[in-house]
Image (tube, rainbow, N blue to C red; front, side, top):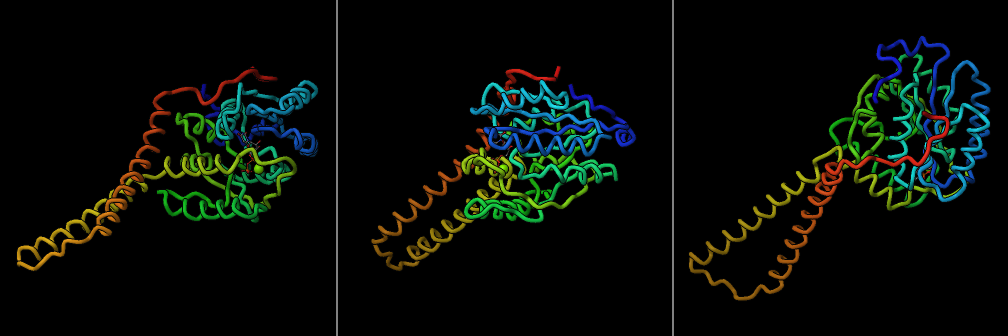
Amino acid sequence: MLIPACSQPPCHRVNSPARIALVIPVYNEASVLPELLRRLDLLMASHPGERWTILFVNDGSRDESAELIRRKASADPSYALVDFSRNFGHQAALTAGLAHAIDHDAVVTMDADLQDPPEVIPSLLAAWRGGAEVVLAVRRSRQERGLRRLGFDLFHRGFGRLIDFPIEPNTGTFGLLSAEAVAAFNSLPEKHRFFPGLRAWIGFKQGEVLYDRQERAAGTPGVTFRKLVRYALDGLLSFSHLPLRLLTYLGLFVAGCGFAVGAFFITRRLLGIEVAFTGFTTLVTLVLFLGGIQLVGIGVLGEYLGRIYDEVKRRPHYIVRRRVRLE
Ligand code: UDP
Ligand code: MG
């Protein structure tokens, strides 16, 4: 069911009070949740003019996150919970949250670990009321250090060059989607999802709000380095055919070299110039080099093929165990 709350923009902006949903994926965040809930309560109390729904998606947490949220939801009708049957990943949790937030005028997507401060949300709403249909929270600064930081920087810098349409480099999950943008997002069927890319892909009028990305309030990142690499690959492979094209160019280059070398030796033989019967080192190097390139080529093809296989299986993105305060 992909029916937006209102299909005639800009009627969502005259709805009063506006129905605002916050979609927050949660994976083992019990150490942060009390502080997050406190700050969300403060946000709602200071903006009583809106109708808030805080929609947590519990992505198979192994701590008491789900129980904390369920307890909060039973005491406060603004809170709701979608509880997954296991860990399906950050992107699946976002997808579920957006699918459950269709009857809202605007949906804010954010992380649970307070790296995206709830205090920025009023600025996102102001930008939306000012006419933006997709509001990006753009990081003015970042707190990560070391390898993780280097990875983020390299990815954001390289990625922007590789794909065919612009993605604002310093953005992540944090931002706001209007009802129309949510409907567009929900209509995308693909399984391997790269949220910032898809958000840029759907288009709509974009607005930006600058903010300082905070340090994770407590706990450890649930998105491990391995998951980040896979996420980066999803982003690159689902928005670019460049790896395949590079392989074609590399193949052409190597074949060209082979042709030139072959022509050189054949000409020498025809001209009667002695061809030395050595070259073991050269041969071994060439065989290993070409074998390596072929294996890399097969690997890149395999990355695309595996993703195609995942898509054609058409398994659901996630399985919901239970819903609290949601039909
Ligand atoms: N998260 C999730 N499923 C996962 C890993 C993370 O829903 O498998 C949630 C997590 O609770 C947090 C958000 O996704 O709200 C971002 O995760 P994290 O802080 O680990 O990522 P980072 O900020 O390092 O990108
Ligand atoms: Mg985080």
